[in-house]
Length: 332
Ligand code: SF4
Ligand code: MG
Image (cartoon, rainbow, N blue to C red; front, top):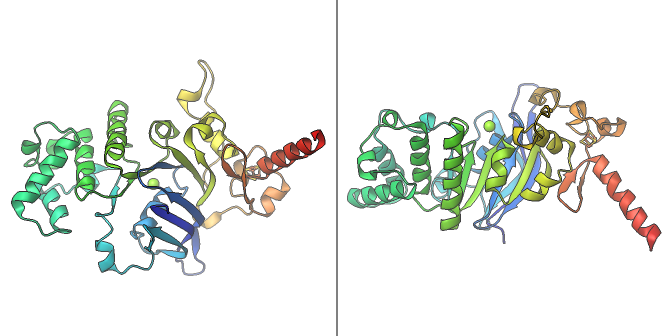
C-alpha cells in the first residue's frame, strides 16, 4: 500500500457567479521513503495541491472531489482536531521564505519548543535537548547557541536549515517542501537541497518537492509529476522524463533551462503564459501555447497514455503510439 494516495482530487475557488477550478482530477501516489517532484510554472496549481494535501487551503478554496489517503486513512474527512495529529507531526511542510515561516520576535529555540509541545507532552528540558539535536542534525554549527538566537541573526541558508530542523522535530513520515530554496543564492540552494535529500534518505522520510525549477528535480526526485493549469500532464521516472520528455509542455520547460542548452544556443522560452483561473482554455489547456496544437486539442482534453517512458496526456503522443503499434502489427 502506498503511504500517500491521491485520487481524483479537484479543488475549486468559490466565486459569486461560478466556481473556478484550480485542480482538475489530480491522482498520484507516494511510497514510504520515496522522493517525488511536482514541477510547473507559477500558477500551475502546485502550491494549491500542497496546501490541499494538508488541509491548509485558504478560503475561498475548497476540495470539491476526490480523496487523499495517508497510510490508509482518509484525510479529506478529518476534523480540525484530528488534523492536529497529522499536520506537523506525520506530514510536515516547508515553505519558500523562511522569514515568513519563522516568527521574528521569538528565538529559534522558543519556536522549536512550541512546535514540539503543541504535539507532545514532554518536559521543557527534554524538548530543548531534542531541538538542539535536530539543529545539529541539519548541520548548524554551535546549535545550543543558535537555539537562543533570533531569526534575523541567522543567514538565509541557516534559517532554511532551522525550518528543516523544525519540520523534522516530530519525525514525520512525509515532508512537503514548497519551493524551499527559491529565496536563496544558487550555491546555498544546492547545499540545502542536498541536505534535504540526505535527511530524507537517512530517516526514511518521503518527500514531495514542489518547484518551478526542473534543474533541481534531477538531483532530488525519483519520480516527477509535471503540472499545467491545474492538471498533471506528464508523470514518470525523473531521469527518463529529463532525457526524453514526451509532453510538449515538459519539452518546453526543459528547453528553457540554461543547463540544458548547448554552448552558444539560445534558450527557448515557451511562448505565452499560464492561463489565469478565470480564463481556462477549452480542450487541452496547453493548446494556445503548443506548437503542435490541432483542432481536436481545442475541443476535448486528451486522456492519459503510457508512452514507454512516462504517462502523458497529449494527442500527438497518443498518435505516435498507435502508429508504432500498427507498424508492429505489420511486421508480424
Ligand atoms: Fe499540444 Fe494538443 Fe498535445 Fe495539448 S494535446 S499538448 S495542444 S498536441
Ligand atoms: Mg507556488
